[in-house]
Length: 145
Image: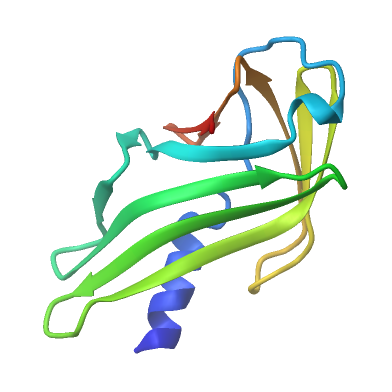
């Protein structure tokens, strides 16, 4: 059932790209951070990664990107495949959009309400072209292309 899987995926991954926190490095202005960052670590696992939801369902995370634009908008995309016993697997692209601002090496991501999740504003840092953040006890990492 696509709707149930999509909701499950959004629940699993909605906040992942948004809770940025890491080491510091001076960037200076927004133009210094503009670009595409590739997902390299998701929930502490190198990409590609497999996550078991229960004995009957799992999710494969294949790739992802975080694009920071000059107009201060961003798009985060994560490619996943859902597998459930007795059901055909399917691949989906999970997308989060919003705006960002920087102050030195600090970055703030503002995400409007979307896909049933409330609006949020989150802070983090960028170091040497790597965005690293922690959500709960898990680490996530994007490296500049």
